[in-house]
Image 1 (cartoon, rainbow, N blue to C red):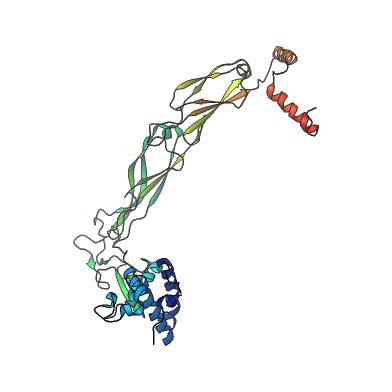
Image 2: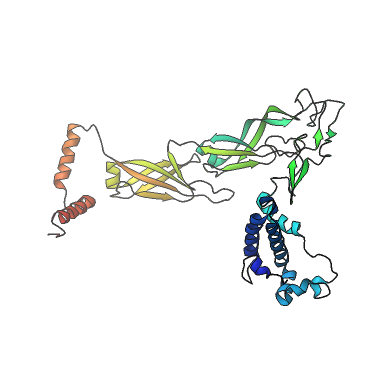
Length: 378
């Protein structure tokens, strides 16, 4: 009986990509696997057919030979692919590609490793805007698991050592075969470490680690922002069973400032200006975050909300010599608690005002008239 076309077996078109072939094979293999169809001889035959087809088509050389010669490419004495005889197919090997995609190192897999990595730790550090500007070195106290000083992290009492686990022979994992599958699991006896401690250390009770506060120095560079994360490699919790330490992550938060508001690398400052200075012009003095002072010239007729830019007076750019800018926003202050004479002078000023004295107010009134007249400026 002639064999069915491999492409038809995998329900794919000739020329399909490896990804399409793999996806189709994965679907069909799970559908017809003998473990899912116990006692069904036809399902077992179907499973072998699709495994054979995928084993050929996933390999570029085998696929090229098949596309050229068909099944004859793999018959003894015909074609290079079949030279030497024997069974060129490894059904279990084919299915293992998909099996690893599904389960990865969940069952042990190739990525299984001895010992457990320590946990990553988080520390929240609050700094001022000035500290974010200049940078600082902070001393922090971190409670974490560290290697036991008594047993040097081995978990065994003095004079004793860990023994090779008899269950897994020191591999840290055991295998179980079920039907077509060979599954690896962490050894329950040694919890994947491959070692058994029969005389545990009394200080750490065999864990190899103890809880202890550590003092660490953290360098905060100039220019950091809210939410900046600093990673200290290997400063997290100690690993178990000889595993590596975790990492420590410092999360920075910057407190609000009484004068400056930050926007990225730029700073903003709202400076009150008297009614007279805004009208007649003048000069005001403003602070800078580095502790200095800067003069800002206020032109005659300055309106509230106008901003003046001071170049390179903002925040440092992280790991750079550049700096952002400082923006001074003018807030024209309306005088309060006026004397009788001051009120009289203001009324005289109002009476002596002419067209163009209050351009914003006059423009707004003009727009109002146009709106009330239905769009007719008259």
